[in-house]
Image (cartoon, rainbow over all chains, first blue to last red; front, side, top):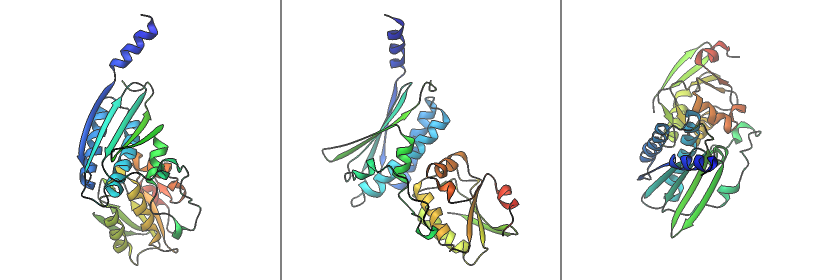
Length: 158
Length: 112
């Protein structure tokens, strides 16, 4: 086995994953996001990246609480994390309403050059998610949503 | 949500006594800010020193608090922790508000 293959094998061994589920309420969401971020810190995710994950994940989970389960009793949010030396993938699944497609593609930040009485009081969440992630994948299957967020962690994560 | 308020020569200081301004308390925050700043100084300094985390709902609530002050009054923000500052920077809200690293820096600027 050449050196490159050996390094690849070692890196594969460093993949770490875990899952976490909670009910889609505002307070359970706080707990769930906090728990995931603490575990990632414990796995060596650098603090700066952990902050990015906390901000983006909180927005994604809030969207589920406020929109996906808006018309029904709150259902489950299932989070899966997969961390290797290069990337952190976080998948967030729910059984609520589908995500409007426009949320994934609209890339422009809010126009802040308006008179201050016209400044938007919302709509910043998806912008934050897009700014903090390197890839976003959305799948809708059998009445379930799965949003996968990718964060680059480079080689700083051990 | 707990807010405390002090009148100073630099303006009214409103301190947020909470570690988070998030979706769970954003509406309460906006309402508490309304009653706390009613008929007050022309400059309000929101002291965020204790706040470690803010989400887009919290950000929206601070924008709402600024808007409900009306056009003749100003809302400045002080004591932003790294994560709070990051949210303001990413959403470019740092171009809308005057941000001060600490409360003492904010109060060093006289109300004009």
